[in-house]
Image (cartoon, helix red, strand yellow):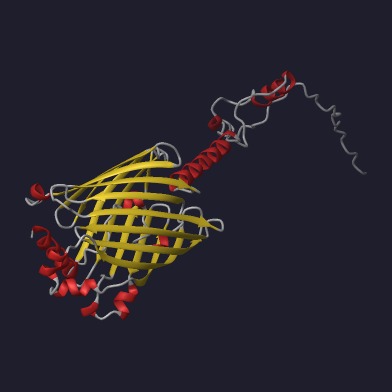
Length: 384
């Protein structure tokens, strides 16, 4: 009987709040399940995640997720596919999706991406006995989900990125929103958006990432996350986020090498009910390839600018000290600068007595004087 009551409560939650929408840690999964414009953006990856909800509740929901996406044609396009499955007592939901994205790069750091996604949803009942059906066979919620077959749907998303921020918007399950009557809707359409900062630290070796995401399920039902993440040397990622509904999330990720990363997220309910239902745990394993990540590009840009600055400083057009590769060049350089004062501001000062500027040329004393004959004065003869 307890199992039947749980099933009825689950059906009611589907009808009221739209719990068929997957909730994963978007930071670790980089999931284009919410925004198809993320497919093939910056890098490709194969990701698998497992989420166990409410450790203190028997037969609590369990989520399984696997995805693969990759850039193609020189990172101008991206393709991907994902499978998400959720088991809630006797109800089993399976979502299969694909995405295609186009990435327009303005420069090394700025780009605009757009993507379209398709989705196929299947809802099934598992483990129902004849005794169970006798209790819920006339329930309108059960009858609504019982005759549900696979339903296709599609989504659209946009994302803009520059040197310091990412912004994304997406509209999911548009066929359900536009074509399906409200009284026969099985799945919920929803809208998502996120803003993620990228603040380089330690000359680009570390990145600080403030994060905000928003999901709107209906006119009066929405969800948001606010978090802060820190990535050290592109190896360790640690952060925390709060979610509407008194939820607190902690995330830890470790990258073994440039390809393999593992992560763990723990979500707790901070209200009094959290002590009864327990916490949720999420495990993530990700393999990255075709990487063009932000830190790598920033480090390269920083090193190039620093190298250019050093060259411009060292190659000064005016040399203040004498020097040369050979003794002859050294003697010539010393002769060139020896006559000058150590302080260059005294070179062009006026003399006190003459009021003239002193010459900056080296005085010469061996110059021969020109021999000129003196004129002899001869008086003119007077005419008589």
